[in-house]
Length: 279
Image (tube, rainbow, N blue to C red; front, side, top):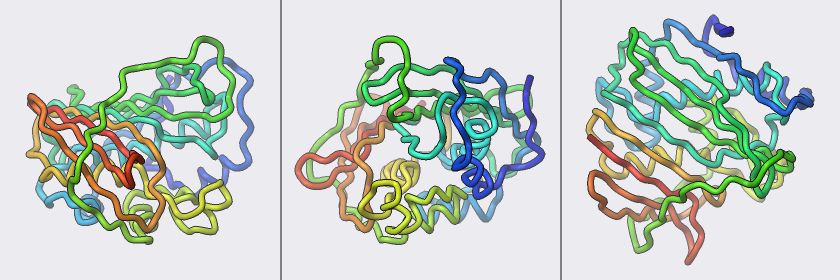
């Protein structure tokens, strides 16, 4: 049975509830979907997202933006339904988004989030959350988010999937300000404490404030010129946390039908690896 949200959930109460929650003892994930009906994109919020990540402001939604809308229902699902882990300390490992056509700013949509699998990992266990965005009866955008629950023991052999190849080279230099986490939190609503200040980041084991993974992924895609709206797939693997402030380089390589990319710092540190396929 679906659980329908009357509106997009607020993050602060969900994070407060997450701090008090206890993991389920079940070796399973809930099958219930969390659904947001009659949704619409906020024009001002989309424009602010574009300005912060570098996308051109158009009458269509940037490819990664629906994940901003989906993240609230994802958190709601993981906090309010019985999961064998707790939200604090969860790590975003990978994101895969696909759209069949451009999404117009004014289109009404239905968005549904569901857990679709949990697997052993060498550092704990992973859970995959699938998001479907429908316009009318058509699924126009889908996302698959993989999160790592560190230290959670899960039966089975650790899963090893295909890894994206990270290109190397000089690339484009980015200088990422110290307040990027706070600015993206204001746009996305994701007020995870690791992104807001060095003090709260240190409470979770980070030396400095951490950039949101989806800000980095969106900035990397915008760096390609904000690909023209249309059918596309964008695959992302998150690596080392991007501590703020930072100077990094975005390296890209042309592929048949798309691009490979990586956000790097120093000689060997990779913060993000991407692959874009269009058409």
